[in-house]
Amino acid sequence: MRKGGFFPDEFTLGSVLRGCAGLKDAISGVQIHADVAKLGFKSDICVGSSLGHMYMNCGLLDEGERVMKELPIRNVVSCNTVIAGRVQNGDPEGGLRYFHLMKQIGLYPDGITFTSVLSACSELATLGSGQQLHGQVVKNGVVSEMAVRSSLVKMYSKSGCLTYAERVFHEEEDGFEVDLVIWSSMIAAYGFHGCGKEAIELFEKMSVNGFEPNDVTFLSLLYACSHSGLREKGEQYFNEMREVYRLEPKLEHYTCMVDLLGRSGHLEEAEDLVNSDMPMDPDVVVWKTLLSCCKVHKNAEMAERIARRILELDPHDSAAHVLLSQVHADSDRWGDVLDVRSGMKEKKVRKEPGMSWVEVKNKVHQFRMGDTSHPEYKRIEEYYRGELTRKMKEHGYVCDITTVFHDMEDEEKESSLSVHSEKLAVAFAILVTPPTGPAIRVMKNLRMCTDCHVAMKLISKITGREIVVRDVTRFHNFSDGDCSCGDYW
DNA sequence: TTAGGGTTAG
Figure (tube, rainbow, N blue to C red):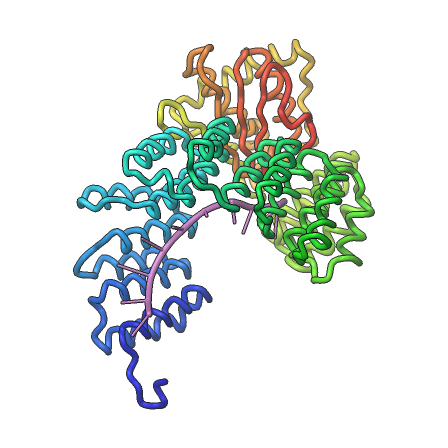
């Protein structure tokens, strides 16, 4: 177009910026930015928003917000651009901050605004703020929007309130429309809470209601089967996906199948699936899925083999090192454990530190393994190591040291402090809330370890409290000595 | 003819 001697106008620039955003191509985006300035479209709100969106989608959050700030006016769309840009690119708190700013300057949020801020709450698992937003959604008259309601389902589900998610979903009975995305989000919600049977029932009901599943629906369904130990059902649906619905499984679906087979103990079948049945090259994620199955089923030999594959693809993968060392520890191969650890030290690979968050009285408290900076730390540690541990031992608790992974730089200091973050978070919540209080909801950045899982079951029994832990992959709902996952995770 | 949003493996 330019070679032909034509000048781009605001429409051309907006379209091409959208392309850069989709490609996450900031290099071309910057060039277009220069054209925008040269051609005098710097103050155009549509072009400016496209620019802002492009920067934010490329991960340049502050640059994007700066561009938007320089526009002569702000409107709902430009604010939504900043909010969604932050939420979708790793800064949900920033998205919520901008939402409050938007209201302060007198702009009214619309349905799109709410889908973004609800998504921020899903990520942060801040049920309190999510519920407040639900109220505003109703007041602003956007509850009937389907995108808003699927965000509500997800927010409640990821905040640990499956029943509230169900309630929003069943509002269809009050005359609200439903679509495939709402169905899929409810199926995903059941999976995340370990309710595989319910996920399957809903899937069947969805088909009866005339909705054709897409690849996302299947991913959620396979995930639900995998996390509930429904191996045969999972295989059946995986086949149906291809044969009945003519959907080609993607790498993600294969990853789910590897998890389904491996988790249920069929490690060789899972390995065969990766090595021979998959039409695409496996990525690190597939191998790591298989490796964590090796850990669950204590297969050190396969773990070695798989870990080597991962380290060929990424020699600095921290999770692969940690998993491998844990598999060795499980088999009492302490020499191998030391080898893995010294390898990590050489390559300067460090374990990702475990962190947990708990919301008490609308305030989020953060705990990190080995970090004593919480103002109540001393009291929490005393309570956990003293009274609580004593009572747990009376119920037969024995600390499972195979899961302890000392920080290598500061091993001695760590071992004296190494109480996992979720234990601290729960102990804190018990101390500062009444014994008859609502469920304690904790979010964690890694997968829960077996020792914490045993401990949580006992703590729920001893204190009579319901404890809900969201780890990176799913929910564990502890009550009266048992967990909703049925020890299958 | 240009700007923003929902479900998704590990």
